[in-house]
Length: 455
Image 1 (cartoon, rainbow, N blue to C red):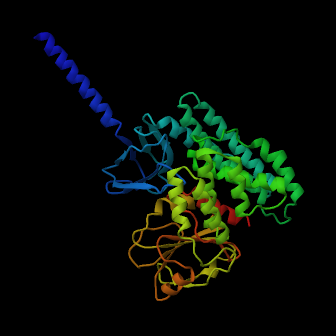
Image 2: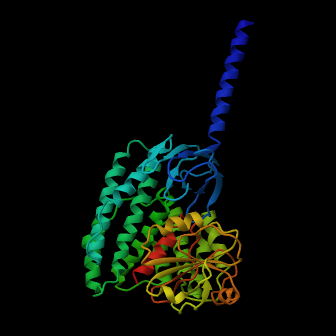
Image 3: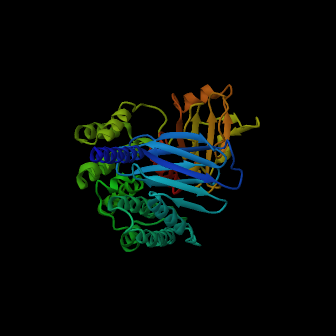
């Protein structure tokens, strides 16, 4: 009898332990504290996460600080790595990765971020590598060779930090983290090929710059279905495909040519994701609708990745006429928050992101983060409230709906919100349908704005 009781007790304890472990693994937990500054009870905190960045839209949760603490329990997604962005107000924000079921604690103080939990090593690697890149001083000259050298030093600084975490992270997670961090800087380095300097840059100079300075500095990352999880790595591969085509053909590639190039150089899930990314980018930049429709039709006949197929099918069905890249941006004048009229011409010489929104808009976290990437003397975000409801304070210029809003919406072919349009420094449309920044943490939209700056 005593033996049966012991066995029963052992079985009950074992069952409870298994149940507790299963329960713990049913959520990915992000918690933390906000100390100092204006933090306190009732301050909003939000988290957005992407199970398949670049393809699927973000999911989000919001909460309020309890005293100075917050906690989110995210349902476990069927992915190897989860990308997330947490915004606790002002400079207290963080972008990182977690494995499903991980836990992470972020302790924000006035000038320090302390990370803890089993998800901390990967997040710390990304945080410290970005901090190392920020410490690399900018070049005195703003020409292509100087910028290439700057990005090269940034990658060297980041690589030194990442190597420190090589043995403390699972191989797949380390590969995604490294591809995402280095891919972002490598894409910007390749973009220097198209950098517009006062003197211009000849084809021979471009070839020399690419072969002698850029190619030797490109990160050694093996293209795979694993590294395809990193959206910034996909951006880099797209930039590299365009550069490789240019070096081989000595001419800029069209949307169709770069589509065919990627299709013939990659396979599997990586091909599916990279082609989807290229098509979405081209549609956002206002490429030729007929050409892109043909590419999308071909893509839907070969794609295997279900989420990619769904994303392109939805876009393919929405290709329509309207404003296009290169045409002058329609002029308008709308009142700002103080009632003063603001004309689009006020921003001549700057890249302008027009953001049309209503009360249900969810772009504040993404646009706030993207805004920090650019000099306010070069890029301005103009937010147009289209229904006069109270709205969150977006970074940039806030305009209100008035009697002219219907005309403005018709001129810009706006039929749903949110809607984004990029206007170049010359006052012409640069991108008519930029990608949703909640899908990829704003990486594609930031790249489009950056490209517009280099015109």
